[in-house]
Length: 252
Figure 1 (spheres, rainbow, N blue to C red):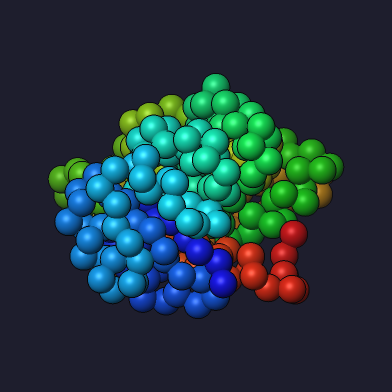
Figure 2 (figure 1 turned 45 degrees about the vertical axis):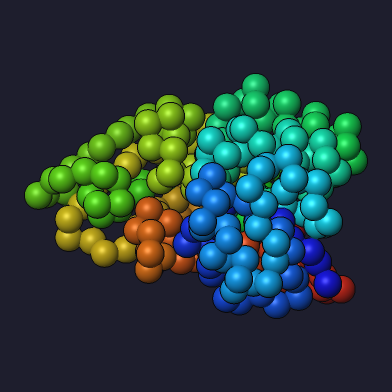
């Protein structure tokens, strides 16, 4: 049974606790200690009030379900403590210098960094297409104004530019773009739209390369307690954790 340390005890943490299968949440930490203690009662894990005690707990890996800031603040320490690291807030890796440091920390400790598919379908095939070379990747994301912290009455273009620049402005909303960059090895051009008429997170991906052309549209239902996170993204962590203990794993 895989023993998980949960870094961040919000909406995604509660989903993991409710659907734990093939793993147990053994240790929990949150900047708001009450959240960790409340969730610990549901998961029968141990809540820690300090990160140092948490990362020293008896776990096989740490799942980050907190924020970009949490990844940057604690990622290297997690790996240095000899724990594999599951990164939900992949926007943290838009910073290439930090990404390089995290990679070196993983190599030095002999550990691995796992990035769930999140809100994106088709990452496996894009990884395969990368071998022959991918020329362009364009992501158009449409979300409700509330999930972006905006108040607009009509469909509005919020941002157009590189994924790296978009993450700086909207770190909680465009993890998809960074996941695409990591999978394809290509810079992703992003359009971010706010639309009061939508109640789902819509991602439209267009990729062109030696493999041909790919066009994918995903309409994700937001998580019930956090409209900035898609339900599919939260579920992808459950699948990743389940597959770690499976003898047969489907997908590249």
